[in-house]
Length: 283
Image (cartoon, rainbow, N blue to C red; front, side, top):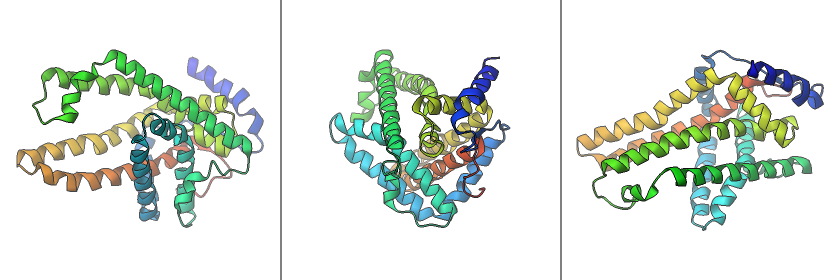
């Protein structure tokens, strides 16, 4: 009942200002679409693998540099995440249209000729920062991080209590991050490409994720296996044959490649969930 009411609200209120100019439509997709998104992400990655890998390496490198700056560095990364998301999705458009991908594509949203878009993207960045900081604060209350420090700072055996706390962080953090992910998944693109206000973009993004929750569940489960389960199994296998140090030379490239393809598949989720007449050609 509630999702139906939300869809009516979306059609009657959220899309009203752009119904004629943008032809934005929210689609309800079958569960199997989650697997299709990954296949389309692989196809998109193949269009310009070097360009996409460059963007991912560039983001990781700059994020690591920013983290070295106390407090301000993390704040800047969180603030600019929505703008960087628009940049990467713009690179996906360029790859489809056989255009060259440049590092400056990350600045697309901030270079928008529309001041209102730039303002909204930065406002969305502030919301994203506040949500992540709130999530971190809640985790610090619920989880004893002092037990986890030995896992990151020494080679001493890990206690059973520390392992329990680690799983608590993953489970609680994952559960709390789900609503944040739903709010932020499509919001940057809805602001930059559909001219939505920040509240409208947040609501529409959340509604799109909820409407297609079955497909997203399949999508996330597959990526969880690829990016988490398989590397852990490979690491355990190499450790079992005393080749733990060599594992990183295999796992790291696979993880970077998988992460890059996952980012490409984000564009496929956008294309599938929202129909827009001015979108680039079908994947």
